[in-house]
Amino acid sequence: MTLKETIIQEALTLFQREGLENISESYLLNKLDISQATFREIFKSIPDLVNQVIEYDLQVQRNEHVKLLSNSPNAVEDIMRLLVQGINQVKRINPLYYLHLQQNFPQAWQIGIAHLYSYSYPQIHGIINKGVLEANFRKDINIPLVTKIIMEQLNMLLNPGLFPPERYNLAEVFRSIFLYYLRGLCTDIGARQAENFFAHNQI
Image (cartoon, rainbow, N blue to C red; front, side, top):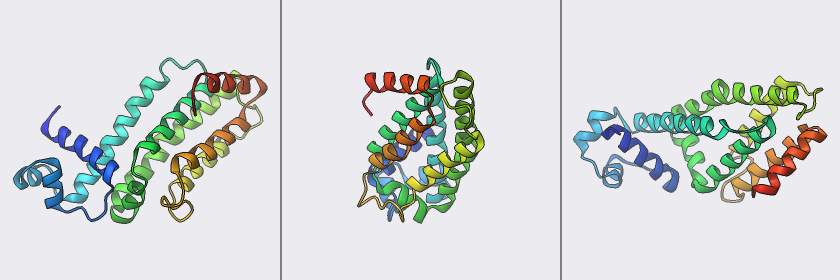
């Protein structure tokens, strides 16, 4: 791992733990234990660092998804594995992280939103289509529409106006939004697959 990669990885851990409010260069130099010269050699600015941290985090997530789904037996479990990972990720992140990102670093936030539509949308669309072909999801569902609904549910989850992090447990919101909606997409066969997953995994 290069020095730059190490700094980005440590910055991601820092931001997700402490949030992104009022971060200054001196704060970052102290927390990341690097010199001003090193920081300015690698990053153009604090927003540039945050942008690169977001891009790194998204790549890590994509790599995790490949491993996560590599031995999944069916589309229901694909979705459930992604659901569990999403819940666990939200649980370990400071609830103000997403709010600070939206408010203070709009370019970085847009990188994340663009990723939802360039990566997450095709991924979810493909899994739902796979589930229909497997007879685990209902064949009468409108796949593009259902995918769009799931994407908008993600946006709803991350909207601090709807779910202020100081009032709502975002992991519980995530669970409540997706778990029950996805159950409704299942056929009887798919529902049994889901119940089998629930029997062996705590969500």
